[in-house]
Length: 482
Image (cartoon, rainbow, N blue to C red; front, top):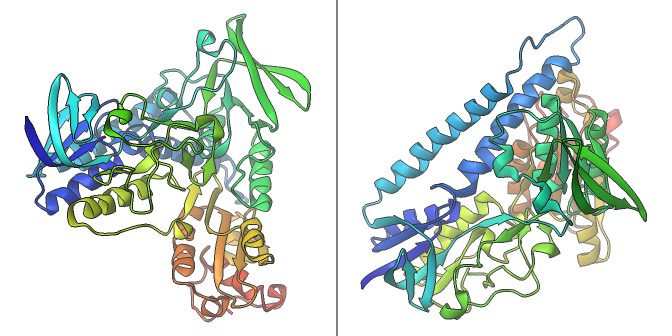
């Protein structure tokens, strides 16, 4: 039986980061991948393809809604199939360059395709062959949760995977679930010209976000023509006159909506079912399922692997990272970093961990919704009081220049020390802006630090300085570049 210093189960962001670090440490390593092609969710069916299509939709929208007087731009043609093929071609290119070629250059890493399952704490079986490992990193990711909707499997549905590969554009589209995935796909298809209805169980389209910002985003999406039904519980599905009909309940009343396709975006479930974790003695968390970008979904609970802050499972030689764990934030960036740190912990007896309070998140709608650190509600729960300010991007000169004043920025600071505890942004390119806020939160900067900074004028990043100034000044009485 072949023995390895490290066996990595998975082939996505966390697994690749683990493999790269293991190779750097000269450890004899085996990577076992099954399911999605090498690269996992991010490059194949996640960030790369979805943001490519979102950008196409944004270009179409800007052509019609640029807010520049005297400028008339016409979209002469929209070939849905060609746009999707461009996305798929980019995915194939990046998968080859960033994953397949990278893996082939890792001298100390072997790779096999097949489903791995534990037969003992130090042994797995793949394709009928057994492999022994001194240490393990589990990075098997997650798959879409199928909610309990009567008849949904018979009627048929799609997940984000199929939604990125459709050959024909649906005329009508139902999205079950909001949150990052549901909101992004809803706006994407709506801007392509599809009539979109979102059904979401809770009262907020994104519960972890600041209500002022999420409510404004809901207003913007509604203005674009997306129908949003909150507090809506999907009950049953049926086919009728060539359409898929979904019956749902809102405030005790039953309603229904029909469409060509139903997209399920109501959470994801960790891929632990076929790992035979019981044979390895690895415990799962019975109370906490997958948390995606700060969002806990109880319907996918009971499957996540329980890990400590050092990514160690109940078996000291077995580590787990990414979507398969019960860690507090689930993103490609965190999965990759966890893979690196877990491998160092496993092979070098380090004690690496991540401060998830300083990890930013972004929903890539337009405008984008991004945040880092505490919300007002979280600060109230931790400190019993808060000091928060929200300003409109109407106070930001660059937003006026480009005609994008619909956004908001909110900052939460410590009431006594004035240390910045959280920043939340709804604006174009908020995902880029939040990187600056991340550094402020991570380094425990104060509003005085920001007020004394000199951001470039005119840029949207000035919003961070302006909201900091709003704690001590009336910003309506300030000139530019103050």
